[in-house]
Length: 322
Image 1 (cartoon, rainbow, N blue to C red):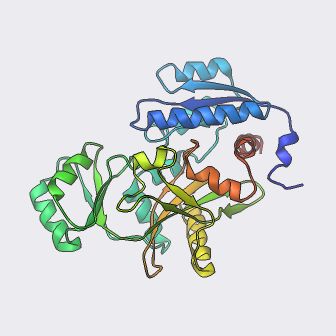
Image 2: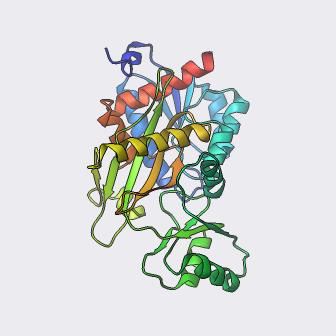
Image 3: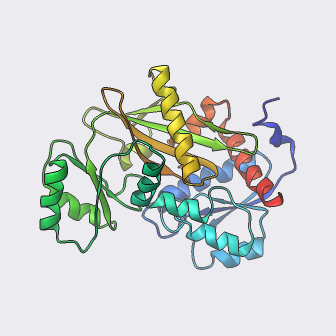
């Protein structure tokens, strides 16, 4: 019997699935939570969905779940805040702890960790919301040119990301992105959009097969293409040289370990035409919607969605009893 599916024979659990909140990604979170809730029920667990609001702690204390599954995206659900609350309540939960969540959520901090482990990341410049954009733009154009990518430091689902592959109005792009908070500006790199999930169980730490994300010509994997069925194609496994595949998987696992993550993560990359790899970021609570990438990678390992969710909650429970 596959070690990943042996846990299915154990007793059902009482699980709380956290959803929503006030993040800009709250709607995506609720979609992930609905899928997780459905999968838990399919495996015979007693699942309850709890909204991340000011009554959340009281609801959890009343329910007293054996495990919490934070199906949350963005702050405060993915940045260590909710994880700290669950630690204080003494509730086992799926995913990374306070420190790992916080490190991964801030793109600049995460990149500093990656650099210390000699992982391939691009140059960057942090731009704060109160910066003098005139002087900042001059420095960016001097260092990177006008072809750049602008990303909010602590947002996900591509929200607030502005890409200028051929240059353009950098001032307007920065203003749009800064609405989501301080930003990271990087040189724009043309290439394939690649992602690699990591599954971290008590038995093993392993990378998923590499996935290439394809969108329509002149488009990229933005919010609409992520969450609209049929708007993107996931090539699993990606058609790459074995050495490139192995290196992408190695980097994904190394980044996971470097950040001190656990249970699951997903590393995003750009692979240019010469097969040069650039690590973009690592997501500690990947989406679990019908169009999400992480479940596709797990399926390629032979782990269907229901079994994946069961494995994750049982891994969290095992950690709490060690």
